[in-house]
Image 1 (cartoon, rainbow, N blue to C red):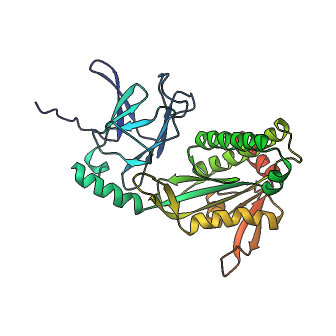
Image 2: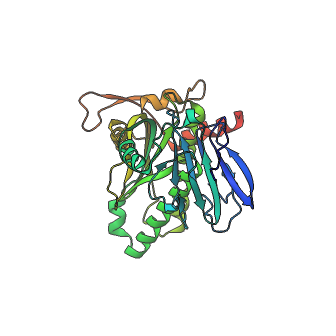
Image 3: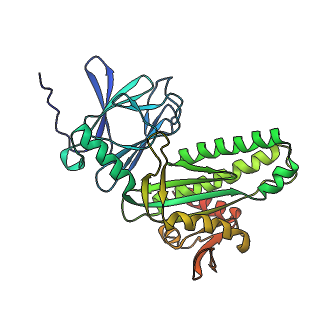
Length: 331
């Protein structure tokens, strides 16, 4: 017997609620939806086997929808296979989170994917390496980390940096992204924007994450016996990049590549010579659409590896916090 798939006007998840009953979870009103037990998620699932922040679905301007596992304890599965890197969903795919089962459906105009398994494998490998997206990259680095390694007991240092990484990851997930890289004493996170234009509603959460990471770092200074207060610097840059799996089947590495990413690292490094805490790129600054309350000062800085001086906007964490508090009050 052939099962007829109903026609839908927009992509959505169909949640199995017992027997033949289904609950429809529409993927509308944005480009990113989170799934988990926590109340902050777009789709809250009361399953004890599901993590507080379990998975995320990201819609691209091409109509493709990616499923991204957010480091869940029990994993996310597509058609019985555990997801280790973000994967493109096909209409009819069966998803499993913990003991909860869902189906993903998309109307024909929202699904530009091949139908056979063999074609899908070829397509996924190609698409993962060749998806050009508008992204925002956040880099946060612990200052004077080398000095810390010399003055702090190894066990205390390990516990402290492990706590910082874990809590930074939780904050990043709270604001709609995930930690793409843990690099020694730094983290890199990527926000994928669903169109060629990004506005304040998508950019402000990036800076909310920066503020919370700063506050969390201050708390760790009081919690651990550090020889001096912990300090961090951060760089944010927005632009186009190639996003995909640059690793192999056994060691996947889903990441973003290109000048946008490189510049974010250079901007973070530039905060030291500028005497500030946060440095951002020109497109990031314009995307905030600032009017009266502008915490950033314009600078021209020589970034390592660049032939000409780069325009950047920079501020202190205190100035950023004042700006965000004012934004919260207005909204």
